[in-house]
Image 1: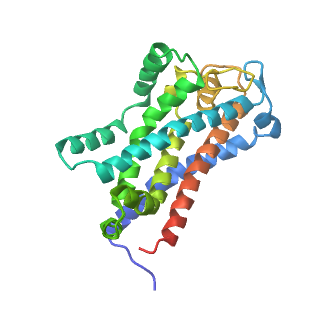
Image 2: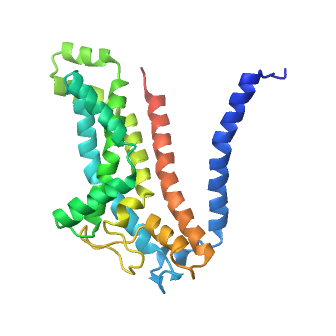
Image 3: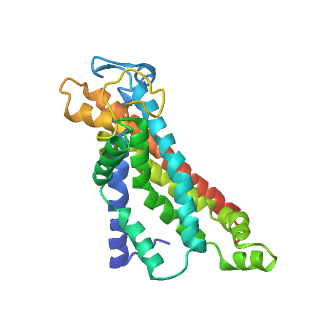
Length: 279
């Protein structure tokens, strides 16, 4: 039987199409244009002639270093803060204001965090333009997202789980660490990966804290300057007239592939955990 749609249903269906088709078309367009410029040499070779020839290996490795450093900071601090807010913080006006502040901080433009990172990490603490300064700046930018994701994931665990653990003689921390936190891990890891995918594509934070456009060597420590895919893409597309267009699209395709891998991994992990849940 042919299904008929009412006018409101057709409107909502059209809204769904407008929400899905343009992003999907943009992703497919980028990958199609990138295919002409991607090769093993492009991915694994060092750049030459100010990036006009050669490869983008330092930019790929620098981006991975950047994400690794950000994860080292944001995961324990963000998850710890989220656990405290969800499980141990008193429910009063101050806690409510703190939670509202975290939600609002998640919407602050990244360039503001970049300026703070430059003033505090690069100049005040003396870390200089380095991977460390950029990683700490990105960690501050993504912390509100991880804290909020952790808090919401823990709130999604039924309260009866906590009550049963406490009734069996467990301490508050034992109930959280052995029951509540494992039940919320899918939401926590999903939120963390999505926050890191935002960090992977950010340019403003790393622009003034350590990224370089042409640096034909790999970083050796967190005090090194580095190349990164988003900054390399920005300069290639806007500041370098001699850059071949296929190299610009290929760089965009590599960056998009990295971000999509993180987001798809988060989605698959969440779905796998949902299937395994018994509650």
